[in-house]
Image 1 (cartoon, rainbow, N blue to C red):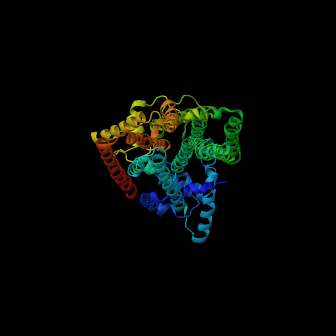
Image 2 (image 1 turned 180 degrees about the vertical axis):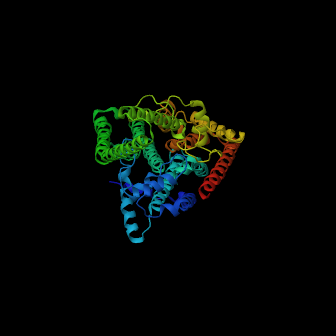
Image 3 (image 1 turned 120 degrees about the vertical axis):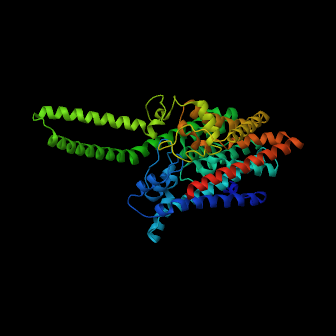
Length: 478
């Protein structure tokens, strides 16, 4: 059996550019660590409250810091079934470091993980462009760099959320599947299962993309009974069963305990309010006192409800299709056109200066226009290059495999409205498709046309690096 880890060896032609990428990831993660080190490296019993209340970078969650500090299944276990277990080794290392130094190294351990994921995401993106699409070394380097100049790709590899590792696994899967297509090989059952468990274990919806990739690689053999049973149905059932077990074992007891504690605290508060009402009311009859107190409480409940409706977390939440574990995350009321312009192909690529990196659940409006027309010009140029690349690569099975995963994301976000109020934070799941598509445009052109395209791409990449980099670093150091 060939060594599966050989894929991680850096090739000679990749070394110089990948070193620059590595240093960039280290520098950006160092800025992130320094921004919160004074609070997050302290060991305290209220670490969860400190992290959740202090951390604020767009809509990203800092849950990983807390899980590595005090291990619990804190993530939504149905959306991220294996994630808490994937970072468990980091929790063991952190506990050892805490016992030796008295400092919490969660930030640094997460930074090391993100540097690794970012570095190899760059490597595999470069290999897709160079080996599978077969564009020049210069063009592959530039388009790989362009990917990391996109705002929410840059951010995904410095924030303590799951999007950086998720993007790494998706790009790795694409590279492996692309190699199978190139060599005319089938994706073996065990390979499909491993890729599915990794991608779906981090984010369940990404497991669907593994099946999409497997379908494009294996063709009709994907639908053979043995393959469907062992590579699709069995791992899907296992991961869902595991998520149910994880919820009942780790999450449900805590939820019930918190619910009971909250009910007890509410009852104690109600008793205090009732006693205070009795002490101040002029009523003497006990029944009238209780009736008047209930009317008073109803007014308080209504006032609290109206106040909550005005808060950002409720105000910016669209109307869901229905209630339920998954459907409650949908949205049928948020404008798709404005979302596409300002967020999907806007904020994902270049940050808005107004409400910079604020959270829609705290203070950021869902839709923010750019200050300058040049921002829309940049966005339009990138989208046009993307569309032109799709046209040039329309006969490529590999490109259609990539676009099928992209289409699945668009169905989730623009169709169902899943996470549409902050759709940009999930863009690491699909942004890598854009430079892949653009590569087919580079491959199709030559001579002066190619020179013009290279110049345009270089200017866009430089602009986005400078613009997004300055805003991101400025936000963190301030």
